[in-house]
Image 1 (tube, rainbow, N blue to C red):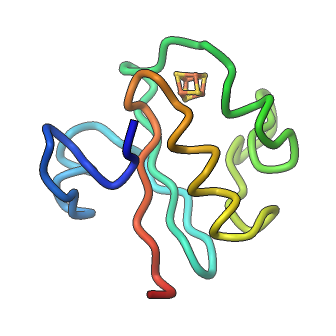
Image 2 (spheres, protein in one colour; image 1 turned 180 degrees about the vertical axis):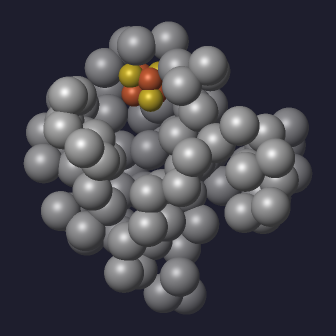
Length: 89
Ligand code: SF4
């Protein structure tokens, strides 16, 4: 699923926050996560245990991977619970 889209439209931070997503800021990319959408399929954790660590606070640390790697992982999320906005392009 394309992590830049929400309802087939390019997402904005305002829409994500209004839609219940929580923001995890990184230097080159912000990751957004919506717990109520998550299907707990675990693709994120398997993609990077350094970025996604259940039980850690914050459980998402974007800067533990490159922005490009974050994009690849987020796009494997099947539910749409993960979205991103790049700040480096
Ligand atoms: S990949 Fe998406 S649906 Fe699966 S656990 Fe991570 S956030 Fe939830």
